[in-house]
Structure formats: structure tokens, C-alpha cells
Amino acid sequence: MVQFDHHRRLRSSAAMRDLVRETHLLKTDLIMPVFVQAGLTGKKEIPSMPDVYQFGLDTILAEIKTIVDLGIQSIIIFGIPDHKDEVATSAWEENGIVQAAIRKIKAAYPDLIVIADTCLCEYTSTGHCGIVRDGEILNDESLTYITKTAVSQVAAGADIIAPSNAMDGYVAAIRQGLDDAGFINTPIMSYAVKYASSFYGPFRDAANSAPAFGDRKTYQMDPANRLDALREVASDEEEGADFVMVKPSMAFLDVMREVRNQSNLPLVAYNVSGEYAMIKAAAQNGWIDEERIVNETLVGMKRAGADLIITYFAKDVARRLDQA
Ligand code: PBG
Image (cartoon, rainbow, N blue to C red):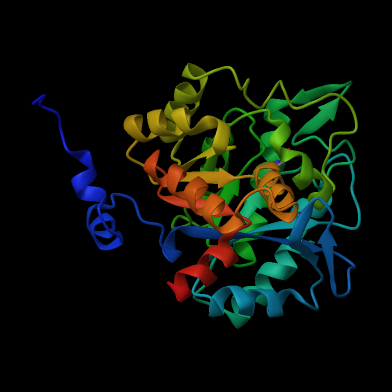
């Protein structure tokens, strides 16, 4: 008789499989993205993201209630302003759409963790994440405005700042700006590893933030690179980041694992808009089982080392966890 290992012993029944399962998806892992649009009354579905909506200030609290009632403890908020200019004024003015929404949300739900996406691309006339002069995206000038934005968001009540504009030195600049404003206890969740990805397509429809010229390849990373990701994480840690993120997720799980092995900071996976759209589209065609595919996808991110997942599926997952 040949000798071999009996791996199937531990897979023999559902109870046995439950007993030895290594990775679990929890409600506390989930961060739900929320889009709020200036001047919108009611809510508007995003065509390339079925079941995801832009909300007006009049409907935002109903959405937050749904999220909170499902037991989700954190959201990340994105704004769509009604005016754009070269210095992204609507990103950092006191009564910007994000600032107004945060004030409203925190007044009604003080315990909800509100993360502010801190970027300029929704607010600049160029659609770039930084300040542009003569066709060039300027690094250091952009830091001034990203810092102003972060400070104004925390002044409005944001609990965590999540800078995504991918300029060098943004963590150091924002940390300094927050500390100078007295916000020493506000953590920074850095989009440390942010690839120049086509998976952001539907988001740019949702946030109206596609660049008017060129692309983001001088500030976001080349998807072919792995060591660049580890350098970005090292810099952001040194600059004072409290969380690091890898974005997108599905095509970058190897990078997520390496970042997990290199860094002791909480690691966030961003399950981005294109990843959401692909699963939704296939499911709507009846080609895949949405529930099981979503579970497999998110568990894969946790297995790769993610502690938290930003996902448009957060409400669906929380609902299913209630039924289990
Ligand atoms: C802003 C930002 C983007 C996303 C999050 N913050 C777009 C981009 O960098 O072009 C993408 C999120 C998604 O696709 O779900 N810079």
C-alpha cells in the first residue's frame, strides 16, 4: 500500500470545514464607500455600478442609517462638487460638499467612523489629483492644497484622513498640517500602494474625476512593479502613516501579501469600482453566483493579509453575515 497524506479528513463535513477554517470575514473588516453630490436632490444610480448611488445632502442620512443598522462601523466619503477650478477650491472650502456631509453625518451618528478620501481630482478643472502648470502635475505645490483639504475635513469632523492623490511626501505634509491645526490624534490611512489602473473606470464616472488630458502614470504606480510598492510603503511609514492601503486588490494580491510581510501597520485592501462592476455584470447575466464570488474575492484579500476592506459590496456582505 502506498503511503500518502489524507487531506480530505479535514474536509469531510460542513462542521469539520468550519472547525479548521483559517480566514473569516467580519463586519468590522468592512468599509463602505459613499458618494455625495452637491446640488443633487434625491439619489442617482451610477450606470456602471449597479446598486451604487450618488446621494444628495437630503438623502445621505437615510443611506447612513441603512449602513449603521447593518452593523457596519465605517464609511469612506467621496464628494462631487458643483464647481471646479485650478486650485480645487471646492475640495477645501469650509462649506464644501464633503465638509457639509461629514458635519451632517457626525451630528446624527457620532460613533460611526467617517474616513475622508483626500484628493483633488474631483475638484480640479483638469481632473488631475494635483495642481497643473504648463501641462505638468506639480508635486510640492499640490501638497499645500492636499493638506488644506485634509485639515478642513478634520475640522468638519472626519475621524480618519485617507489621502489618495499619490504625490510624494503627502503623508509628511498632511501629518504636519494636522498637528499644526491641533489634530494630533487623527490617523492617516495612506493609499500607499496605488497603481495607475484601468480598474478605476467606473469610479471616474461616479465621481466625475477623469483627467481632462493625459493620464495618472507619473504619480500612480506601474502595475508591472512590485519593489516600487515596497518603497512606497517604507516612505509612508517613515512619514507617519497609521494605515497603508493596496489598490486595486484582485490583480495585486501578491503585492498585498508582501506589504503585509514588510509592514506592521493595519493593511487596507481597496476592492475598486472596476472589480465591483465586473462581478455585477457577470452576475446580472447569470454567468456567476454573485454571493459566492464576492465571498471568495474578499476572503482572498484577507488571506493575502488585509485587515480591512473598502468595498462597494459591504452592505451585501453585512446582510449575509446577519443571515448566516
Ligand atoms: C481619487 C480616487 C480614485 C479612487 C479612489 N480615490 C480614482 C483615481 O485615482 O483615479 C478609485 C476607487 C475605485 O475605483 O473604486 N484619486
